[in-house]
Length: 348
Image (tube, rainbow, N blue to C red; front, side, top):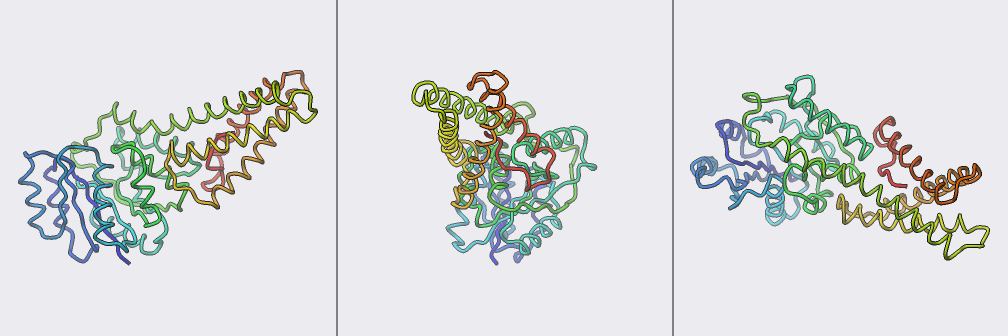
């Protein structure tokens, strides 16, 4: 089994060399250090890395973000090792212990088709980091229906089946890691391995910019929410168009209009999922399951709308309330059901 290691580094600190010196030649089939545009002031540091003789060094001319650095490294690895089975990513600032990296590698060897995360324990996190971790974990559960201990960990083992999604995931900085993880949770089983929680000098080496990078990470839940609202609006407008203008007079016009609008929304949902929000690689089995789930939800939505109509509401008003009720119900299911049980989407 061929496994590589990628260590992206930006403006290395005094923790980098002691961390890298822990590795041995046989730990991985290939070990790559990527300089994410640190600049000429750090030439000496990276020459030290090269002198170890353990790592392939890739230096980028400009800082493009951790996500970009890892994508460049993966493209290099795919050329160098065409039959690569997977790779690990680890931060080079000393926050990941050598022993924990080997622990994640061992878990990946046991589960080569799964995404493996090294999960830090919240009880050991400083308050500043703990707040961000809790917030991130909660909205990730809301987005995907998958509960995780640590969605922000940089220690990950990624199987070959996710290489394409990794390279296609949008964003190059902090938003990339969250976006890739959200897409991967829909494609693959995700396993977590407990690791040490290490913050050196109160996390002084971090390059995280609180406001700007928090907004980058928030892109995905915001995009997911707005996508749901957009598709719900299209559903109602197309229903109204068909019911009022094309099928008026038919006793089955409300049902036909509702199902037709739902089929359009399903097509747009798949388009957004695979091309617009998460760039998830389409799989026939998953699309078929999604389709039948949409048919079922459409009938449930129509039944709710019919109930509102019987209470005196117009069909359009009933559809709006039905979509809103179903939307909130699916969000609630994501929050309370165990991982893997709640549906992976929240659109009606």
